Length: 127
Image 1 (cartoon, rainbow, N blue to C red):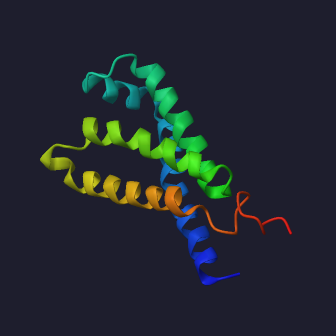
Image 2: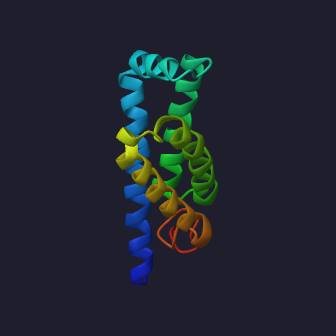
């Protein structure tokens, strides 16, 4: 195994942790999250909060396992675009805006170069 395979594995795990933690937080504080979405004018906030949990959990697991990881990275990137534009464009959200842009950069790297060999998508993982 090459160094880039281990780096790709660790990078995927770190990206996945972000989304899995966010999904878990939304599950623990479902009503509060939906209420916040309502304040921002999001229609059907309870449905969209549940959908956000599903997207973050599925995408996070996809990255962590390297299973359909390019699809997971694409899904999470598409999810982050409106989330960032809706919730993180005000001056007091600058740090979150930059963080989301950096996360999108990492996701685009997975999308472009794949998950590496230490993944279910990789050819050598189960040998």
